[in-house]
Image (cartoon, rainbow over all chains, first blue to last red):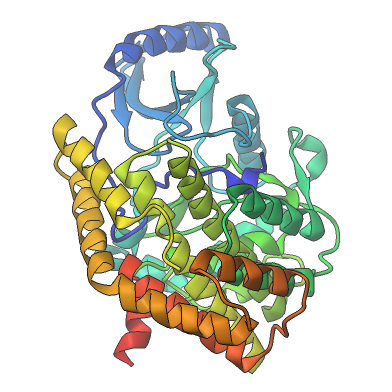
Length: 357
Length: 117
């Protein structure tokens, strides 16, 4: 299964999907995870800090996040544990492993990308995971767009996204864990395969696949691609972007893919008029990207990868619908399936814009 | 053609969720949105289906139900038997897609922004 087709419930997706509160289930797990953490601290740091009880956070369906604090020498640090769930609500094959994710975070941090510091890794092969620094700030996309305290941050965020993406795309690949390689033709083929696997007949998706196949970009040397860089996966404070989260669909591919994904209308929330995450312009994004040494990227490249991104999200929604039809049912899954039409609307709008241009 | 699951299938899940108990907050809002979608579908679907079927018949020159006609249109686009730039094709796809969004998600911001213009 391709990384593109993994449906991982985002922390929030605007109306009608908003952040849910702490989920009560999984309380029994807390004690065994805390014990695993103590072993990990002992092995990797020689000393075991005093750990607070773990509290389950809402978030990805394919990974669990737990908040806790670790106190040593009188200093308390807020941390987040990311661990594999005991059971997954939605299919999660195709994402990178937690050890690979930890290794990517370390690599990104060493290359100047704002990411949480990895503090220790669980050694349990059955239940992998890692603890990272808790970064304070807002990550809910709709609130990032509304919060008055973040107005200053929003003004510079499109440019800042460009600068951060330039740093991600400059990361030397020889230090990276093994990742899928998906250059444009493979990437489009993966989406086509995912769509065909749903068995659905969607004329707009067919047209978008033809459109993409006719415009495969030449993207130069393969780059490390974050894969899910968008409003909703960024932690923002009044000073701007503090951390880039959710590296689980990272892969090797075309650098411009990340820039186009950031412009997909589904994560502009209530600001469809601002293409970059609902907070900025494409011009500001590209200015920041190029000033920080990013790859040559044109408006056509952005449009190609935005089209690809809307289709990717559409195929994910269609896939949730196919699983619903196969018996994996829930109200939430059914409602996600009915979001495929929003991507059809966006795909048609982008084809029209491209034809007018 | 409206997507699956149908409003009825969504309501069956709502019924099950209600029996199990729905937590306040996110799950409750999603459930309420599902009921609203099912109500819109019930009110709007029949004439939308008729109009889509007429457009498809004119476009493809064949008769059949929506599933058959849409499969034929998909094949024509995939094999490039139909011109992707054809105004008739694009008009059909826009009308069908706007009709779907009016049922699925009338508050989707780009769609609402267009409707308000």
